[in-house]
Structure formats: C-alpha cells, structure tokens
Length: 280
Image 1 (cartoon, rainbow, N blue to C red):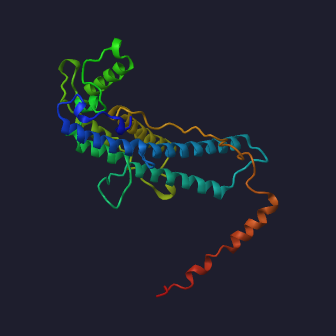
Image 2: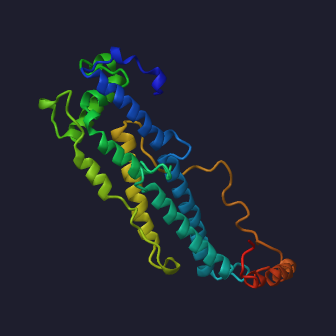
C-alpha cells in the first residue's frame, strides 16, 4: 500500500499518534531500501541470484562437455579461468555491498541489508504492536473472521507475528509491546559479510557462496515478510527471452583465429613502462 493511501494519523486506532508518525516515516525508508529503490536490497538479491544461476548453468554445460568427451565440443582454458575468477569476485563484492554497515557515512550511499537491520535496531522504541498493526488504518481490535474475511486473516497474522516478535502471548498482549532486540542481534550475527577473498579465490567454494546467499535471503525475507509485512525477497528472475540462445554455437570461426593471434601480439602494453616520469 502506498503512503498516499493511508488514512490520516488522527483517524488511526493508536494511542501514541506522534510515535505512529515517526514509525510511518521510518517504515517508508525501510521499505524503500528493502524493496522500492532501484538499488534496493531486493533488486540486489535478484541480481546476485541471477548471476549465480547463469554461472552454474555454464558450469553444468562444462561438466557435460567433459563427461561426454565430444570431439567437436570444448572450452577455451584462459576464458574459462577468467569467467571463474570474475564470477567469484563479482559475487563476493555483491555480498559485501549487501552487508555494508556504513549507514550514516555520507561518502557511502550504499543500500545494504545490514544498514536496514541496524536502523530498525536504533528505532525499537517506535516499533510497537499498535504501530505494527494500525500504521495503515487497520483497527487494533474488533475484527472478526465472519465479518471481515481476508482483512481479519491479515489482522490475525500480524498480531501473531508480533506475539513472537515481542515475546508476548494472546493473554497478555499490549498496545505498547515492542519488537525484542534479540531479533536484531540474531539478524546481525547471521551477517555473511565477513566472507574473504583469497589468492586466486581458492578459499571460495560454491558451497560457501550458497551459505552466504541463504543467510542474505533468509534475513531479507524476514525483514520484508515479517517485520514490514510486505513480501519475501529473493527468487530467480524468470527470463523473458531464451537465455541459452547461441550457447551451442562456436564463439568464432576457425579461419578468424589468425585475427586473434595478431590482436594478441599487437596489444600495446610493452611500451607503457618505458617513460616512467609523469608529465608535469
């Protein structure tokens, strides 16, 4: 739901109107960073998983070629090495960007998962049950399954979510229950941002990348689906074209290989270290 469609705060079923006003502002920012922005966490995760799936499809093609030993199928060694190293470097940088903690650094305008987690942690005082339930105009109580149907289902689910988020129960619910900070600590501890590059990326395996992806998707989806009550993050984008087109074709004709040899020989690099003094 867009903020423009929310009913006026004065008409919301909350006791602390000022707290709700602040909560709406912060929630809008959290949702922007998680879902709405062009560089949102959600879009970063989709790009991360898309690149991973493209690489693993290529990796499977490589496995099939090696296993079946076709005479007319092969892969160029230097190109494969470049793809391997480039893929790992790209994914590790994307993981680091998603887990960048520099929320308030004006020189680092990166939208990251950890930034959102930390900002929610800094605003637990406004993350109350009544704000969580009523921020969009929903009544705090009084809905019924028979009368309100799907609205009751969402209302009931949000109350049950907040029971778990606050540690309360149906019998002792309060409008002023707050999100338990243990969830923030748990989300932070699952941060995969400490993943390190090693020489030629030898320390990074596909299994280690999977662990990082899983932690990011799980944390992001918890924030999106439970904390903001919007939707989960992640999943593989469905291509609107044939992503395997031309994969079964050679990259170059045999008669053109001599052109590549000439290009390789004539690459202007050897003269770059001849004049070492800069021009002042």
